[in-house]
Length: 101
Image (cartoon, rainbow, N blue to C red):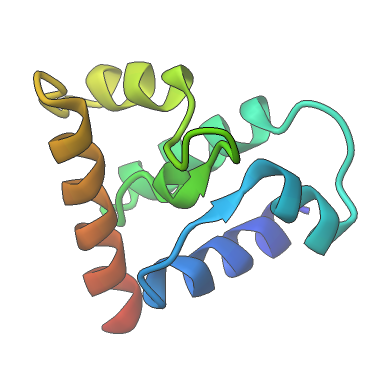
């Protein structure tokens, strides 16, 4: 399952887009709480030098990641003094990395 989620999120990142939690569940037939899966995937991707891939997963109500993403970003050494700037910077990094392969 993690490989399918990683592949879809990489496609979303390469396109410079975002996907809602609901759309992610629907596209991959997932149920339940996605946060543990997304956190684990982001940590693994970040440790591999590819960034916090879950930055492209957003809440439908705000169009931004949930508070957990920002906590994870801080834990992983990102400066979240300006949360929106940190998030957009991570998305730009992901887009560049996924486009370049």
